[in-house]
Amino acid sequence: MLYGKYFSIHLKSQMQYKTSFFLTALGQFLTSFSVYLSIYFMFERFNRVEGFTYTEVLLCFAVVLMAFSLAECFFRGFDTFPTIISNGEFDRMMVRPRSVIFQVLASKIEFSRIGRLLQAIIVFAYAIPASGISWTYDKIVTLLLMLISGITVFSGLFIIYASFAFFTIEGLEFMNIFTDGGREFGRYPLSIYGEGVLKFFTYVIPTALFQYYPFLYLIGRSDNLLYMFLPLVGMLFLIPCYCFWRFGLRHYKSTGS
Image 1: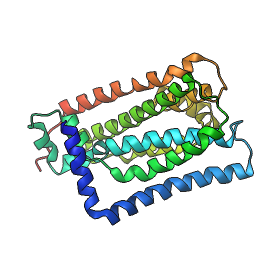
Image 2 (image 1 turned 60 degrees about the vertical axis):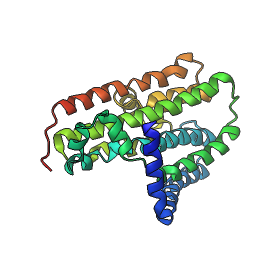
Image 3 (image 1 turned 120 degrees about the horizontal axis):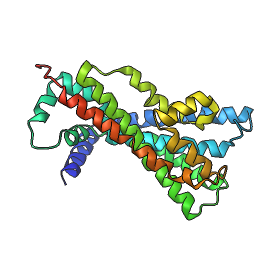
């Protein structure tokens, strides 16, 4: 498989500088650990936030952090896409006999994001048994759908960010509000930010479809079976993201680099 070869090449390349790799991974771990500390100290002062307990919030935080880490690791090529355009590399991609999306996807795999992923795994290891949730088959499926849908939504946001570069050449930093900002907002259930924010992240950027509503079903705050399958609806977000990418690709003009 060609992607497997790219995967191996990137891994070998990054492991050539092991000290740099592990320090970067450690930095990623410590950054996300500081976010965990903010949650910890919040619950040292308040027993509940909008009725949600410490372990419930940790479970929510871990889902978003793991989904973001995996999306950033494997869709990093779209995050760095403005550089690919500005240095003329994209022109070469267009004449190669492979899908452009595949080439962008395989152009950058950021393994140092394992630091954030490790943080999410540790939080999961604590929160899953401590949450008091009865892990029946439907709850396990719900959790898996939340993770898969989260990866899809964040990946879609990276694709939108890359698509803007067809028109601007440079990346638009405001997209960080929805990528990094979505990760930061996701540390708590979205309802605590107010109805307006919850609606925005439901109908515009469907973060709530994998973060909030199925989470209510997971912790037993709602018995609405529809909430369990809302992450599948969130995955459809990838369709307009792809359409925007195709729209940008049709209007692309070489930078002449």
